[in-house]
Length: 431
Ligand code: EPZ
Image 1: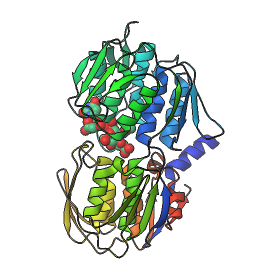
Image 2: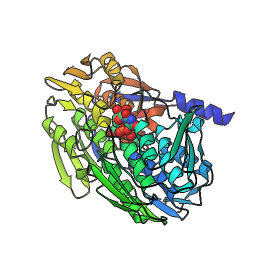
Image 3: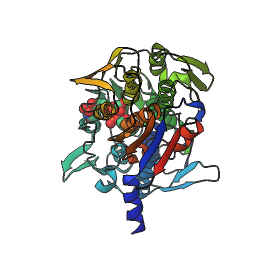
Image 4: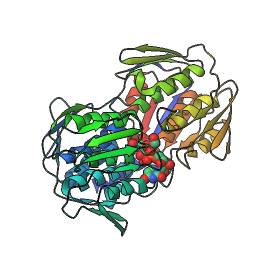
């Protein structure tokens, strides 16, 4: 009963935020969620021990570890806080009740098919921001020789006890996890695989670095063409997860929106160049050190900035909701166009309830800056929308309640502690 009660509690947790204060101080950026998840699933490509450092303490990571255990891995944290994963996978089924809580589980399909020769992975289904199809993942595996059927909501994949074969294919759309799934599968295929129109996100490069550490032969990651020469087997080793550029971008936007000054540590500015350019356009002062970024917006007007999301290295869709708060209180009008997901404007209605002047026209939001936002009770609908509402709560004078913050716990490590470190007033109200 206590487990269910806890689970229900998590589902109704709220944040209570008292806003109107400038954030000030330093925050240490954690390992990237969107690098940790494919890398965790990539450990299935070897039976040898893997040690992962800088793994963020997130609900999605916990879910992924549960999935690895179901599939046959032993997972534990050592005395240094590194995650140790070992053992040989022997179960081919990634179950619905787990996959439905974390879409990234679809990336079990490639490694399971490549290592075990068979897989049964529940179709992840859509989510709040869109239909999230996985047709490109399936097409790539079929091109490598996998037989794939879809029934009862599961993707069943089999190589009929053959090795996957290297193939050349063009991704119809730029897909981050699609590129990652197929790159992982190709590492153990016989022959050469060429992925054209590949995603170029920094998390793809971090996954490639991890796989190369295991002995994979991969070139071109970070460009639109990735070439993988398959090997017989991959070995164990150690890897440190790259910093989370979206977490860093989120705190920098929060600093700008509250006219504060924040230094993000343990993150290299090369991971989020486009976001930094747009923050400079918004009139923020940005200082770059070797492994830290400082944003200073004290006493400075926020200027409006037009944003269009697109695959890396363009402006990331995962920063769209956060930047909308900045444009909502900028001195002037701006537009934000979302080109990746068909339904990623659910934070707009909540921001309007806080006094923002926003109008949706198709996949573009017209923003007219207002003096400030008003505190209100609002509801989070997805991971980055919840980040947007927390920033809005830090901006608005008075007390804002953000409901359904379990979305937040999926992707932001210890967020209330980090915001308190920056002088923000935020409490988690247990459900
Ligand atoms: C990854 O999702 C990220 N998740 C998302 O981050 C991120 O928003 C997204 O990439 C875009 O950058 C992880 O890395 C775990 P896509 P992914 O496949 O891979 C279409 C967050 O907030 N598409 O790049 O699922 C799709 O509909 C999350 O951290 C197909 O049509 O996204 C979308 O329009 C949210 N068929 C576009 O491609 C496919 O088979 C890009 O999606 C796959 C995708």
